[in-house]
Image (cartoon, rainbow, N blue to C red):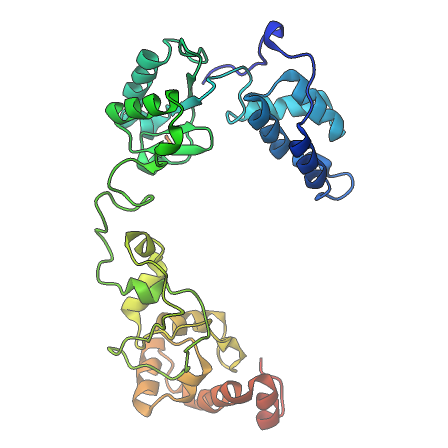
Length: 345
Ligand code: FES
């Protein structure tokens, strides 16, 4: 990584002021913070200054420090620490930050750097002949799974080949950077498997990734084998590999072990049933039991199954789960108090 210093004095402007629009934004933004905590606004203020000027000037650093009552050195520390801040003039159409950390290096970052040297300038931070493009090498930008990658402005361009980077540079140099879709440049959705889904293919992703909603949830137990109903409202808007990526391993495992198909909607607080603690609630969720009404409607066969799975040895009946759950399903804590003369726990 390069040494990060302010640009030489002869390129530094004498003064800095936010444009009218940015000034209005800055006043409002600083007011978001309680008195004495204005320094919290420093990074967004520096970004605004960079967006306006194209880079972070010494005058901007001093202006922001004064406004936030910070010593100049503190703002300088922030600006020199984060590579998102450019400390000297860069390409007018785009500054390419090539990730050179291990995963990207192993996947071809050196070739990407060579493309930048060939098409822009042999030296980092020096602009192309027409002044439109510049480049540098930076450390990990957090998209390692799609290595190798570059950052241009606020967008990442991932899964790059030297050829694809050449096309991207040409587009930005011609002022057509907005025609390039950021993200993976191959057949990959976000950070899902290249070429489409390869794992968890037996999961009902539509049901598993449905947003939490009480709509259409009867709370009735659903026997394993009959899928829980996913209403149109609760179904994800778009089905595809990106939705499947949202299914956590935990959910997948839970579905595998489930006796019931988990009903849609937020789970009830099963811990209000005497005899159910946090651990047992987690185990019940893993069996697909999340609603009071499911427990209230357990059949003797289902009680035996749950007993066996949780190694309970008759505890469900001993602790009278069914009637407790029925009270909670019928009228919540009030009904519970009425029937049992005590608070649900
Ligand atoms: S190593 Fe390149 S993004 Fe992390």
